[in-house]
Amino acid sequence: MISKRTQEIKPFIAMDVLEKAHSMERAGIHIIHLEIGEPDFDTPACIKEAAIRALRAGYTHYTHSLGLMELREAICKHYNKRYGVEIHPDQVIVTSGTSPAMFMLFAALLDPGGKVIISDPHYACYPNFIRFAGGEPVTIPVFEADGFQYRPEIIRESVDQKTKAIFINSPSNPTGNLLSHERMKAIAELSPYIVSDEIYHGLVYEGEEHSILEYTDRAFVLNGFSKVYAMTGWRLGYLIAPTPFVRAIQKVQQNFFISANAMVQWAGIAALEEASEDVARMRATYDKRRRFMIKRLREIGFGITVEPTGAFYVLGNAKRFSEDSYRLAFDILENAHVGVTPGIDFGANAEGYLRFSYANTLENIAEGLDRIERYLTQH
Ligand SMILES: Cc1ncc(COP(=O)(O)O)c(C=O)c1O
Image 1 (cartoon, rainbow, N blue to C red):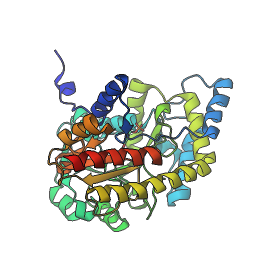
Image 2 (tube, rainbow, N blue to C red):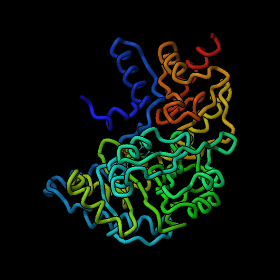
Image 3 (tube, helix red, strand yellow):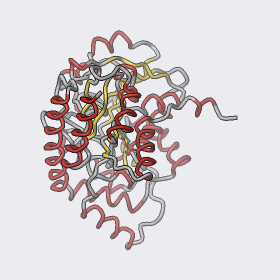
């Protein structure tokens, strides 16, 4: 009855943990959430005001399928200022979040059997997008000792005639680590195209993030407003594509999504042009939490070889507690009343790890980690 294509989609375990946590909360149990990949901050006021102004001004209709020209220009300006790269507004496709941008990108790039190289561990949804578009995800292990960065020489061995792209994500979900300048440069030379998910750009606490466009034009950039501007519920993202692909992607947008929300696109312009102080404030707060979380996780006994310096995640090695991350995460939820995400959600190579999110207050993080410590030392 149900199509093979949808049967093959794996559940997102982080959501399963969250849903179980919610059912426990409904039963009156107090849960601390360290499983969620979503900013706990409210969207900055200047962004909300821009959306309200846009609504009042009557921006309640479809926009151009590629997005408002004003927003596409603001995105080009942002990439130019931040990374020194020149992109044209006609290469920018504004979408209702990074997720639809990914859907459209793979729809335009992949024929059946087309391969996309992804790291293991990776953001849980990547293989599902690739398979749904008829492609084949090829996983490459990345290791704790390297700070979970790709080794370009392993990628090189896996590239063949069917390889359409290498997928990179720096800073990364679930590891919180960045790809170094040297490795990005080496990877940019390895494949017909690079797909770079830059959604955690702007949330970097040490070192510097680089856009793939600094290294090659044979690249697709995925980006969005959800994380850095605390705008998950607004649904706004974009894709920067090489010019020959734009018309194909535009046709997908026109048919399947028509355009992104009009008033939300005006909010996106305010985010890029007016919210830098808010972002700096949120970043400083995340950084305090990051330092605290790394220290406490190490005290409890989780292995962190290379300290994560971006996004809002720590991937801790939990093998001294259990080899079965799924069981361990649910044991912690049921007994310590703390939500954490099992490593297995992000690929076989992250089995034995747990992902902790610091998108929560310092008080909650402290209490959550105390609870985990008490539970693990009693068992
Ligand atoms: C690496 C990565 N890419 C994309 C997304 C999806 O973001 P959006 O809210 O823009 O669809 C997420 C959300 O968790 C993510 O972690």
